[in-house]
Length: 139
Image (cartoon, rainbow, N blue to C red; front, side, top):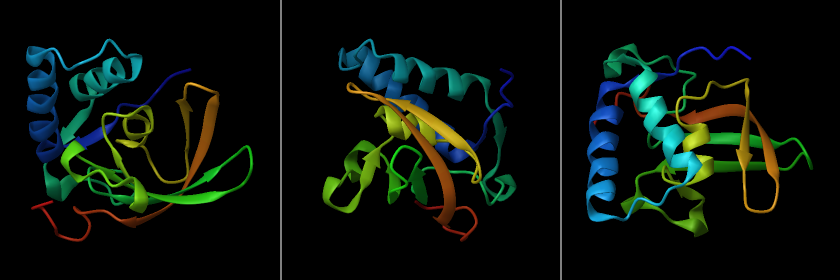
């Protein structure tokens, strides 16, 4: 399967790379396949400034609605940095398998997320909020 490069904003890259480097240098970076995928995404993405991010791309602090293809259940998630995680409000960390799968994904596509129990197939229905499309470059 051929994957198109992900488009990520310079802001997201400049915030995520130091986070991963701090985790690696402190020994807090487990040898997890999803974190290796995040590192790969950051190093192989198509980088653009905040004004060039397509409005249908999940970026950091985006609020996205997905449908679980196994049970058709719809769930909203906010892709958050670790300090902004709030499970009660579905604010998920970029450092989780789901967070990594969502980053850079396009609305109208499917992402596969390996959990400890099963493979989840999620269809991205709608981007309810994207900071770049809303002119919120401070998030």
